[in-house]
Length: 117
Image (cartoon, rainbow, N blue to C red; front, top):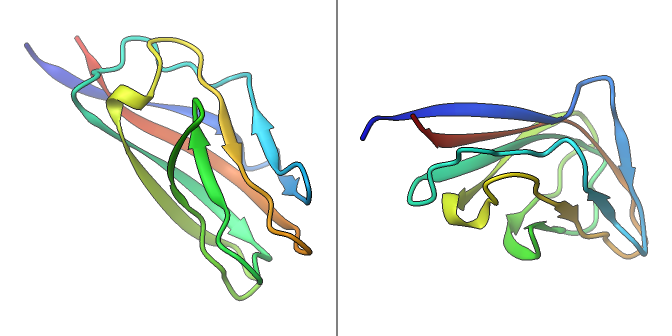
């Protein structure tokens, strides 16, 4: 069976969000991966700025899929890879944990995933 790839923009370039203590950031809308190929792989790219004192966890559907890493205060692209089976065949929830005493910005968050034809 052929497999193709698709992507969904979770946060556009103009939708910058600040991740702050203690709640972090949870995105519950606009993250639909309908038709995803469960045995495949996926990745989420993030633009990150101002993360200076920790490596927050990234969760998809309450599964820890990786971390974002400290940077020098400039915008930087970071990528987290995950198994396709973590994604729902429909809506998903993305959560970025907070870092105590630090806040940082994210934008241009895009999920790329394999999709069944």
